[in-house]
Length: 174
Image 1 (cartoon, rainbow, N blue to C red):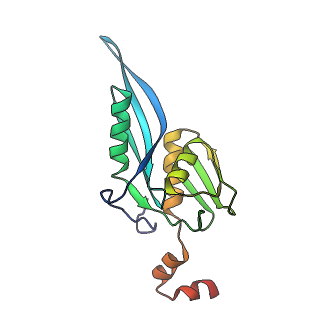
Image 2 (image 1 turned 90 degrees about the horizontal axis):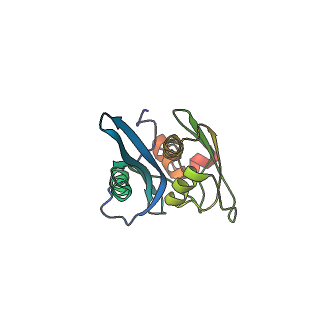
Image 3 (image 1 turned 180 degrees about the vertical axis):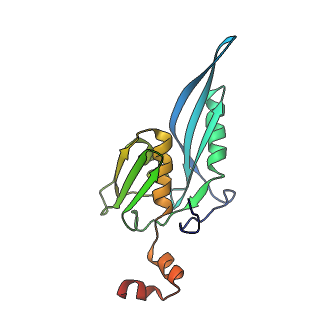
C-alpha cells in the first residue's frame, strides 16, 4: 500500500484517552508430540470516538493477556480519520485480502448500519451515522483491516484543498 497516496496521519497515543473494543477472540491449538497446546488470539480496536482509531492483534496463553497485548499493539497503529457531523465525508471502498467493505455517509439519526467487526471500528472512530456493507470474506481480521483501509482513504474538503494547494472555496466551486 502506498502511504503517500493515502491521507494517513499517524497519531501519538500518549496524549489521548482511548476506549478499546474486543472484535474477536480465537482459541488456537498447536499440536506437539507432548499433546495439544492451547493459546488465544485477540483482535482489538481502540479509538477516542473523535476521529482516531487503531487495531491490534495479541496472542498469549491466557485471554486477558492476549487482549492486553492487542490493546498495546493497537495503540501503536493509530490513524486520524475525518469525521464530519457524525458521518464520513464521502463514499469509500476498502480492501484487504479477500474482504471488501463499502462505507457511505448517512443523514443524522440513521445510526451505524454495519455488521460485527465493521461496527466496532466505526463506533471507535466516532462515526454515529453511516451505511456500511461488507462483501467477500467475513474473517474479522480481514474485515477490520479493510475498514481501516477505507477510513484511511477518506478526505475532507480541507485535506483536498491542502493537497491541491488552493483555497478551500475553490474545492467546492471548482
